[in-house]
Amino acid sequence: MKLTVHIAQEPDIGGMGIYILGENDDGARFIAEQTELAFTTFEDGAYLKPTFIFSRRIGEEFLSGLASALVKAGYRPEELKAGQAEVEALRYHLEDMRSLVFKPLVVKK
Image (cartoon, rainbow, N blue to C red; front, top):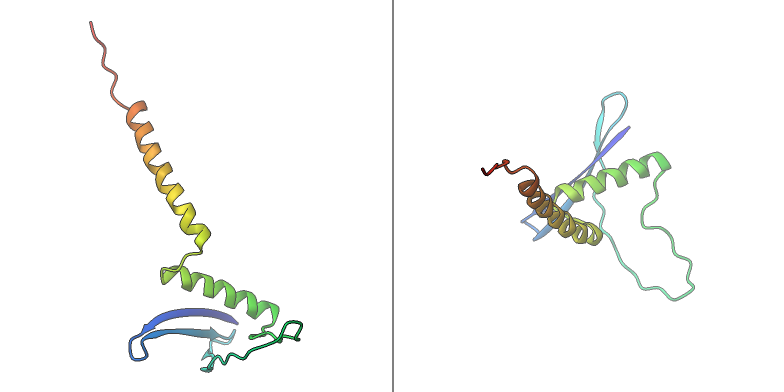
């Protein structure tokens, strides 16, 4: 089984939709049923049940697909956003170095 995750803007509801699609080994395709997340309060020390439960294989495929879909939709972890500024600074530094190193040699008499 292979899972893919798609994120789409849903203007009708003023939000976004997350679609979990799959394909079995025999080629049959399926979609995860729509569910509504319900939130409830809890006290310190309470036993908490997971919101989602997956087998290891399906969980890994879902999380990998979700990570890819988030990046494709433009979402980046804060750590990557901070790192992106460093990459840009390094890119400009390398351009400056190239202009110094690879400029034509001029010989004066």
